[in-house]
Length: 327
Ligand code: FAQ
Image 1 (cartoon, rainbow, N blue to C red):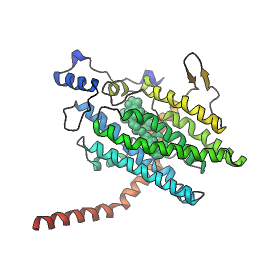
Image 2: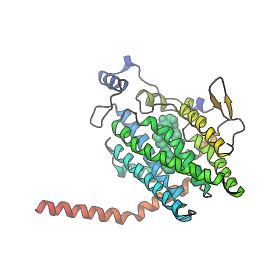
Image 3: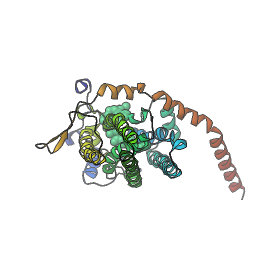
Image 4: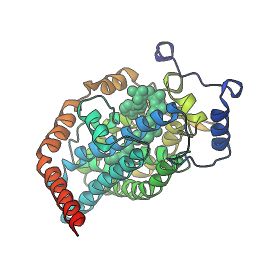
C-alpha cells in the first residue's frame, strides 16, 4: 500500500552528473571521506543535516523514557548504571549535533526544529515505560537495533559523522549488554519477574522492528542516500539482520517473541516474520503515538527552564572576551 503512495527519490546517472558531481561520486565510490570544507552537492548537505539532526534529537528525546525510571530503579547499583546510560545518550546527542554543525547549520536552529515539531526523532521513543523490565527491553532491543543501524554508519561517507559513530557504537554496545543482563535476571527470577520481562518484550518488539524505518519500497531517501553512502544498508536489510540475531537471544532467555509467523526459512537463510503494522508506524511518526505530546512538552519545558543557564554562560563568555580585549 505504502509502496504505491510513496515516490522514491530519483538518482542521477553518471551521464547526467556535472563534472563536479562526477568527481564527488568517484571519491565516494573510492571510499574517500568527505570533509566539511570539501565541495558537496547541496542535496548531500541537506540530507546529512536531516538525518544527523534526527539522529541527535533521537538521542536526546531517547533520554526521557529511561529517565523516567532513574528514581525508581530497584537498587543503588541499577540506579547508577541507568544514570550513566542516560548520560551517555546525552553525550551521543552532543557529538552528533557538533558533527552536524560542521555542515553550516547552528545547534539553535536544529533545536528549534525539534521544539516546533518540524524535525523528526525516532518513533520508538513515543512509547511509555511502564515497568522496570522496560529498562531491560529498551537496552536489549532498542539499543540493539540502534547498534545494528549505527555500526555501518562508522563507514559512511561524511567524515565527522563516521567518526562520531565510533565512540557511540562502543557505548551502545555496553548499553545493549546491560539491558540484556536485566532481562536475564528477570527471566530467571520469580514467575512474576519472568512475566514482567515477557510483557516488556511483547510491548517493545514491534516498535523496535519498526525503528529501522519504512519498508524499502516506501523509503523515499534510501536510493540516493545509498548512492552517496550516507546509508550503507537498506531499512529492510538491517531489520532482517536484527530479527535473525535477536531470535536466538530471546530463546536463550526463555522468552517468546510475540510473532506467531516467526519461522526459520532454510531456503532464504533468514527468519520469516509476520506483517508489520505500518499504519501504527506512520501514525506515531505523524505525532499521534502514545507519548509524542508528552515527549515534546518535556523538551520544551527543559528548554525554557534552562534559559538562565544559557544566559549565564553567554554573560560569562562575554565577560571573558571583554577582559581579554583590555589586556
Ligand atoms: N522514526 O526514506 P526513509 C537510538 C522517516 S538512536 C521516525 O527510510 P531515511 C539511541 C524518515 O525520517 C535512533 N521517523 O528515511 C538510543 C523520513 O522522513 P523525512 C535513531 C522515521 O532517513 C537508544 C521518512 O520516514 N537512529 O535509538 C523513522 O533514509 C536507547 C522516510 O524514511 C538514527 O537516527 C523512525 N524510526 O532512513 C537512545 C540513525 N524511520 O525525514 C536512547 C540514523 C524513518 O523525509 C535509548 N538514521 N523515518 O521527513 C538513519 O539511519 C535513517 O535516518 C533511518 C531512516 C534508517 C532512521
